[in-house]
Amino acid sequence: MSELWDILDINGDKTGRVVERGQPMYDGEYHLAVHVWIHNRKGEWLISKRSPEKKTSPNIWEACGGAAVAGDDSLTTALRETKEELGLILDPDKGRLFTTVVHENQHPPGGSCIADVWIFSHDCPIEDIILQPGETCDARWENSDAIRAMMASGDFINDTYFARLPRLFPDAKPM
Image (tube, rainbow, N blue to C red; front, side, top):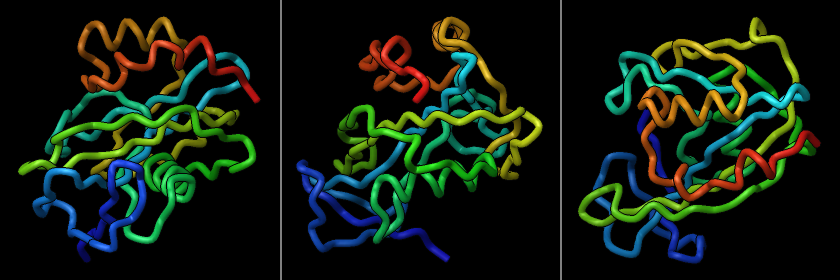
C-alpha cells in the first residue's frame, strides 16, 4: 500500500491536495515530517542507526522520525514513528514541540518539508528497544558531546537542520 501525504502551505495548513510519497511536489508545497529526540534522566539521548538497506544515509546514526501520513498530525506522527522504528510507546504528556524547521526543495521539482522537532522524556533500558527491520539496525543512549562528535565525524546523519539547532542539547531538560 502506498503512503499518502497531505500537502501543506508554508504556514503548515492543509491545501486539500494529497500526494503519494515519491511523486512530484511543486514549488510552495510542503509535507509534514517529525524528528523525535528522546531524553532520559541520565542526560542521554536515544539514537538509532539506519539499516544498511536504506536508500539514503544507510548505516548512519540519527534521531527517530519520519513523514506524516495523510490525516495525521505532528504528535500522532511522532508517537507512531517511535513505536514503528524503536518499539517504544511514549507518553504524549512527556513530550513537547521544541521547534519547527522548513527544509526547502527536498522533493524535486520543488516540494519541501515542514519538520517538527519533538523532545520526549523517557527512561528505558536499551534492551527494551525493538528495531524495525529495514528501518533501524541498532540503538543506543549517548550524551550530547558524543552526538556532536558523531555529527562532526560524519557518523550521524548529515542534515543541515542540525546546524540550526544549537539550542537542542543545552535546552532539553528531563521533564
